[in-house]
Length: 215
Image 1 (tube, rainbow, N blue to C red):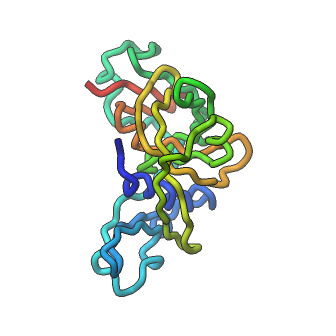
Image 2: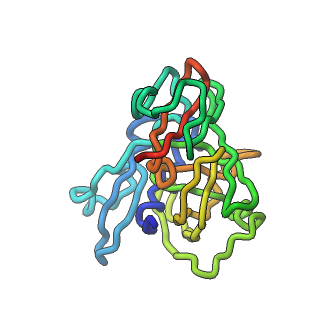
């Protein structure tokens, strides 16, 4: 299961999504160590105190969820499934090119939540309201904080036994409980802690995302 340091990186990646702008400078995520030896994550180099910038490491640049053209982490043929079919243990997710890719995620084999698929977010983020509606317990939640261009925010990471998207299932994992403010009908982000367990093929020509389990 992923640690809190990994999933916190997803929260600071939200700035580019909320603003609707994907400028490289503001979207870069940095990992750095403070004076107490604690690992911190910040959005943008200028949000890091000057004395710690020299040791900061850029982690990722969140990408726009819906690619303008055909994009794939692997060629479609690598999935081993004929075009137009769902691979065993995988998923086919329809989308509209140029629009955010939304998925209906089933949590712990029970209720569903609407998440924005984001290959640039290192961890999954779900709003506290959605988690409460799903009956997720905070009993063993892990406390943490994130630092962004607008300041610090306290967050909790909670254990999810499984997330399932159209038949593609993975768990357990920690998700960040945080209101991303993505708008009505969007409960959070589906990040790489889930997606990295699959070959993700974004086919704009056929308007479908395919998740194929990695062998």
